[in-house]
Picture 1: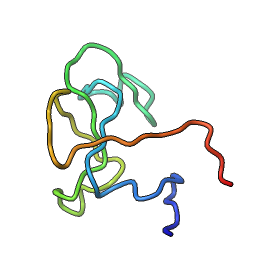
Picture 2: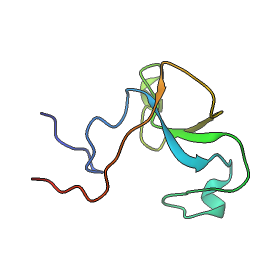
Picture 3: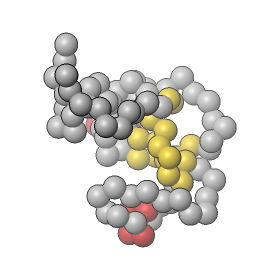
Picture 4: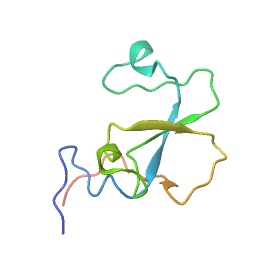
Length: 89
């Protein structure tokens, strides 16, 4: 029932941090594509984005980027399933 955001996504932020596939690097924006860094080099921690219900309002945004160990578990950490090639009916 809600309209998509500027990225064409629905209810993207404010629920849980979302796991990303890239390895966390503090300098990711200077060593990869600046608009969408994807770093798959050395490192143990993984990127998570978006913030969660547990964060302050100013921290709940798609550009918010943090890191977790892959074996971490938390009630405010999850993932989003995406299907490529989806077209609106």
